[in-house]
Length: 229
Ligand code: SAM
Image 1 (cartoon, protein in one colour):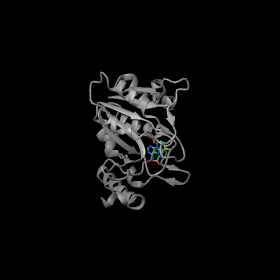
Image 2 (spheres, protein in one colour; image 1 turned 90 degrees about the vertical axis):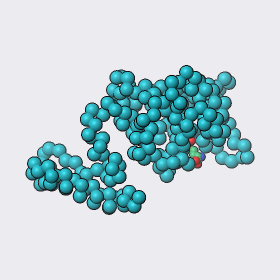
Image 3 (cartoon, rainbow, N blue to C red; image 1 turned 60 degrees about the vertical axis):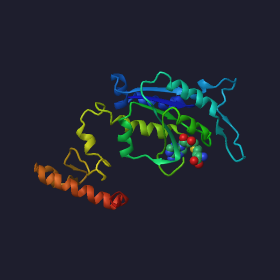
Image 4 (tube, helix red, strand yellow; image 1 turned 90 degrees about the horizontal axis):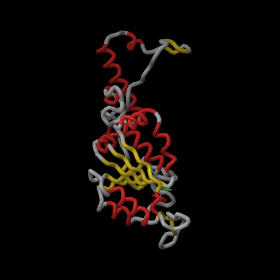
């Protein structure tokens, strides 16, 4: 999979050289390119924002650098890209969306800043690829970088081969619409707290039944909305 990121703060993404995604990049499973949007400016101050038409607080990202950047990323691309703009006004990101996007060949993330991006950019981007406005949740961040990092991590770990044991992906929270069961490791008693006896029993059927019960109970108490759908 190829991922391109456009941001005015490319160093946010330095952390993606670490851990599983760092290994995925080293092994070629994930090709990640982070580009500074200011590369596509031509004035002395490398300006990417301007005042909003109609007035109002804050600045809006100018369309020209976005248009040039998208043109360049699309030129010579082997697949039609999916262009994701993180936005608090977008569809909410879920595990199901991570899975859907993990099957794409080429993703482009456009990180907004200030009051957001000139609306015409989304329209233009739709002539280049499939455009998705995706929200991390119902709150407002300062920019799209943290949302993009979260999405890249959720999508990246679903690329076959990135997570060593694929079974660990199947049992995770949200994969089957439920939260994951609680996990324990050694020692069996820690600060007067014992591991549930069933997990020490060696009885795989009882353990599976207990874990399922725990998943349902956790989901019922912590996220009843997941059971409504
Ligand atoms: N004025 C915009 C609004 O009310 O919808 C918010 C702009 S926000 C300060 C700047 C940028 O942060 C957005 O363009 C977007 O890229 C990103 N952002 C903020 N909150 C987000 C969220 N919940 N999910 C994804 N991206 C978000």
